Amino acid sequence: MIHYYIITIVLCLCGVNNVQPKEVYNDWDILIFTQQWPATVCNEWVHHDPSHTCVMPKQVDTWSIHGIWPTKLGTRGPLFCNRTWLFNPEEIRPIEKSLINVWTNIEGGTEPYSLWAHEWSKHGTCAAVLESFNSEFKYFSKGLDFLKQYNMTHILSQSGIVPNDQKKYALIDVYNAVTNQLHVNPSIQCREGMTYLDEVRICVDKNLQLVNCDGISNHKIVDGVSIITNCHDYIYYPHFKIPPKRIYIQLYKLVSWLQWFSL
Ligand SMILES: *[C@@H]1O[C@H](CO)[C@@H](O)[C@H](O)[C@H]1NC(C)=O
Ligand SMILES: *[C@@H]1O[C@H](CO)[C@@H](O)[C@H](O)[C@H]1NC(C)=O
Image (tube, rainbow, N blue to C red; front, side, top):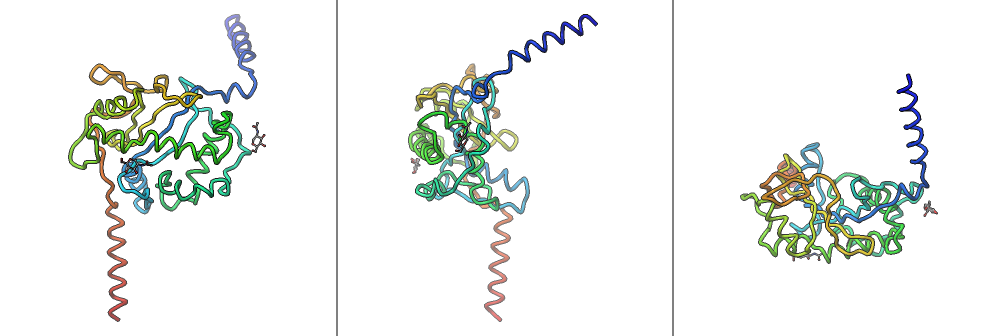
């Protein structure tokens, strides 16, 4: 019984200490700039449901932006810092074409603007405490700038890492390709049995200077190097191939059209 009281008192005291102003909860340390590999994102989307289709970035086999994510070290988020600040398509109208090309909503058939609206509400409203991110237009423009500056297609190709359906790349080589160019540690994420390269994340501080992504989760040791990753040691970096189902649909359309034509 006494134990119970002591525990209760301790819990209460902690509870009191945890009551902090709301801004503290929304505080963060770094921004994670995440680029995604469209071929892997598409495969995952189609695996999830074979009726799914994909929308690809304008340039084939190039990395696409996923988002810019304010992050408190050792945690995820903060997220959804201002639920009343909704995504407004009018604000990004001047850069909409560029966003479609390189910040592509790969998951076809979803609502127009769904990726951008999601990234804005979940992450953008938290980034907005920085002057350089304090509007929707600035948040999305910064994504375009970052992609030019930290172009993963370019960075990986500098070390001879280019899409290839046959061979697997050593994770450590992908890691080294990024650190050789940027001199900071990235986070490398995989999907589909953790053998398909999915995302490369790099980190900047509040002055938008590159910093190591150390302090975000899931390190593992590969060849004596601590890498932030969920990938296996050897991974695919595949070309985009139209999922087979879509070829059947295309063929079916062609045959129907020919039949109609021959009537
Ligand atoms: C949330 O966003 C709205 C709309 O931009 C703004 O008027 C309001 O001040 C914001 N609230 C906070 C707490 O920043
Ligand atoms: C990224 O680099 C690739 C290869 O160098 C290039 O083709 C592409 O246009 C670049 N993308 C951007 C947004 O700069």
